[in-house]
Every structure is written in C-alpha cells, then in structure tokens.
View 1 (tube, one colour):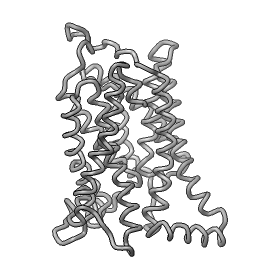
View 2 (cartoon, helix red, strand yellow):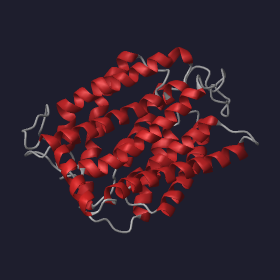
View 3 (cartoon, helix red, strand yellow):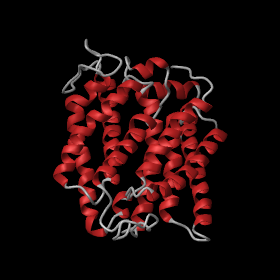
View 4 (spheres, helix red, strand yellow):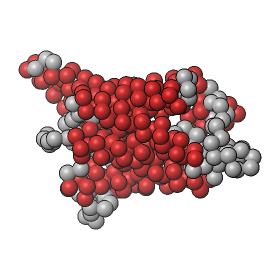
Length: 340
C-alpha cells in the first residue's frame, strides 16, 4: 500500500501485482535452492555459502525447526525483493520483474548465510543481527540503488531539459494509502522482530514453543510478556524518534509546512535502524538510534535528488543508509551478548 500510494494511480495495479510476484516466484525459488544456500549444512557448505537441503523437506523430528525457519527466512527473502520493487517503480516490465524476483533470491541467500548460517564467516566472527538489518535492508537498499541508476529517472522527473536538479518529486497518487501502509509495516515489523527472536532462535518447534511458554509461565508468569514487550518497545522508540526528528527537520526545510514523504521515511528509517539490535537495546539507545536515523533519511533523500537518482519511495535513505547506520549502531551500543 505504501509503494502503490507513492506512484501514479494508473500504475497502482502493476505495483500490487509485482508484490504478488515477489511471494510467488521468490517463495518458489527459496524452497528450491534459497534455503540450501542460506542454511544448508551438508558437505560442501563453507563460510561463503551453504549447501544441502535443496527442494526442502524434513523428517517428522526436525520439521518443526526447519519449516518455521523456512517460513521466516522466505518472508525476509521476499521482503528484500519488494524493497527493490519500490526503487524500480513505474519503469519495469512485469516480465523483466519476474526474472528479477527469481534472481534476487540468490542475492539474498549469500549474505543471509554469512550472518545466520552455522558456518557463515560473519557468524563465526560474532556479528549480531537479530532481524535482518544487513541481509534484508542494506542488501535491498544497495540493490535498489543499482536498479534505479540502471533504469534512469522516470520521464519528466527532473524537468524536461534534465537540468533542474532540485525539481520536486511527482505528487503522491494516494497519500492515505501511504500512511495506511506505514501503519501496517510498523505493526508487522514488531511482530517479525519479536517472533524471530522468541520462536526461531529459542524453540525447536511449535509444540516446543507452547510447552516452553507454559513452563515459564508457571515459574515466572511475566517473563514471556516482558521479553516480547521489550522488543516491541525498542522498535517503537526507534520509530517514534525517527519520526520526530524527521518531522522537525522537514518543518524547518519546508518553511513551516510538512512533507508526508519525509515523515513516513523518517519513521521507517528509525524502524530499520533498530532492527539489528532490537532485542538488546536499552530504551535510551533506541531513542538515539532512531533520532539519528530520521535525520539521515531527510538528508539522504535530498542528496539523492540532487544527484538526479529517481527513488520513488525512499529505498536508498530508508533501507541502505539507515541499514548501514543500524549495523554500525549495533557495534557501538551493544555491550555484551549471551548466546542462549
């Protein structure tokens, strides 16, 4: 909804269909070979790429962990693709995008193995990335930058002469859809961060999750609620202060007015930047990280426009720049990590 609201209404259906393509073809290829390249542990797996578990299947004893991991990682793989979809908006044939969605699964799987695979070299070095700030957001942002540079700007984006570097972006097709998409993204991102930490990393299967919750509830009734609430609270601190800093800055730049794109991107930038350490951040850390991310989004969006790079939905400032900031912030703020 956010992406379709940013483009011309005549291209809205095309945008929605491309998001369906992400799930259909991205999900198929992740089942065929994506999981194998990310988490395969057979002979031939190495610090650069995984190997094994092609056309994923599992025995009854291991299917809980394998299939829950598969579902989560498939959602991340398709998210990395749909991020790029925003940067390519209104300039891509559907047939070409289908091919891209197939190939982008491979692009995602390799860095996912580096960080989350048992033999990944970044995993061995102790890199912390809880919910995909590197393999999803930085990767999607960099790929989006490459894609939009190769595709060139939309017709008339920077003026007919091509010389107006500060030419304003086209008016949003439906700002209401953009705001609704923002709310959905923020709510779903909280669920993704919480569930990834509590379910995939700590529980062998869904039945194990239920038993673990029951045992821990009997011993410490508030423990599970506090664990999930901590993750959600830190995400919302990042969102809130990213939005506040971008709100203040866009008010100053626009001379007493507000730019919806700046506000939305500031909120999303704060959300992205806290992704890497959402389970480990103290409240004040998430505030600082989100506040700085909001400033990054506004500054980068204007730099991208000055460079005549046509980025319809702010992929470069939100995902690439704030993703890099999120990776750096994890190293700057995290004191100690205890592997459970």
